[in-house]
Amino acid sequence: MEPLALLIGGKNIEASNGKTFDRRNPMTREVATIAAAASTEDAIRAADAAAAAAFPAWSETGPAERRANLNAAADALEARRGDLIKAMAEETGATVAWAGFNIMLAAGMLREAAALTTMIKGDIIPSNRPGSLAMGIRQPAGVVLAIAPWNAPIVLGVRAVATPLACGNTVILKTSEICPRTHRLIVDAFQDAGFPNGVINAVSNAPEDAADIVRTMIEHPAVRRVNFTGSTRVGKVIGEVAARNLKPALLELGGKAPMIILEDADIDAAVAAAGFGAFMNQGQICMSTERLIVHEDIADAFVTKMTEKVKSLKVGDPREGKTPLGCVIDHGAAERIESLVRDAVDKGATLTAGGGRSGTLVDATLLDHVTPSMRIYKEETFGPIASIVRISSEDEAVRIANDTEYGLAASVFSKDVSRALRIAKRIESGICHVNGPTVHDEAQMPFGGTKESGYGRFGGMAGVEEFTELRWITIQDGAPHYTI
Image (cartoon, rainbow, N blue to C red; front, side, top):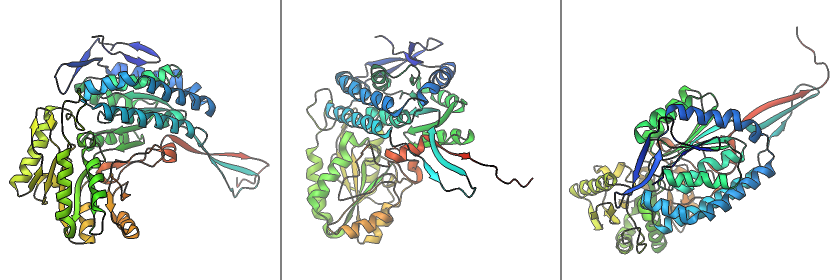
């Protein structure tokens, strides 16, 4: 197996120390990918290439050129469909359906980013000084360090780089140690599309070197923005390093998404949304519905129908493509999920569906009568489990929805839309959907969380604000009166 190289300044190079690392298939434990394990010297070289060699010219390119490049990247990504599906399956155990969805959404994100190139606007600001033209101008920030995760690797890998590139920045994509080949294929699509050398770079690293590599790049003077999608634990470290270096960071972190189902909800619609939101990609999505907060008046009826739904979601080998659910990311994740279920049942929860596992294949699982004494009430499961908490009032529903350190996505089901909207405004989350699933993403929407789900927003004009510098520039005419 040929090791994956680093891409620095448009050149494929091995790590300066010749080091590599292996990624193994979560189902078979066979080596899926061998990749270059960058040193800190390689990290510096990547930042230098993105800054001195590429940024001056790319930042001055017109919107039409950047738009053409991004649209070409979308086409190139779709052309690599077969390779991307294979890489996702081998590195993360993804189903063909999930990989295909990633490609579709990521291509759309690239086309949306292409459309943003003519939306990067400034303002004329009235000045108190006669003869002065004052402008607020948005300019590219510089080099952007983009750190993407494994769970939706194509969507989140593309999201990490698309808007920064549209804004005229250059980018270093630090690929995930879990899916280096998948992420590298994204960068290859940008190269196929004709992006100039050094505009996008790829740095892979061994897991044990991640902290040093990331710290080195954040501390590099040319790196002006950082974006990270991943766990809250790691996000706190990245945010801390960025803050010490006065570098703005966009952090999209963990979640514990609630779905409130009120007594007047359409139960069938709520069950369908909960089934999708809780179990798509084995619940390994930051927006996954982890808590079903159900009014006691309809709880029994909801549990009956939800149990049927969960039992219908079979798990199987993702390589065979015969089941809606595949494997979780590794044995450690499977064991952690199993321990959460065991703890909940031991403390009085009712297991209505699932609960079993075989290796990394974990059954879709539903727990009823979950209480705050159980670990699963608070801990992010990031697996195929949904927990039901029964409530008796609107205020109790809001209290429980907010009884978490996280605040990414949420949802409210009620036939009274005005009431649901009123509740949505009380939920402490960056995203909330009325009568829809918690798992929902569109490239043009402001995407991000509150509390320990992070800060900053990807998407649309919110993303433009994150990845540009707003500058005040004046043109002054005449001879103003100076006090000295």
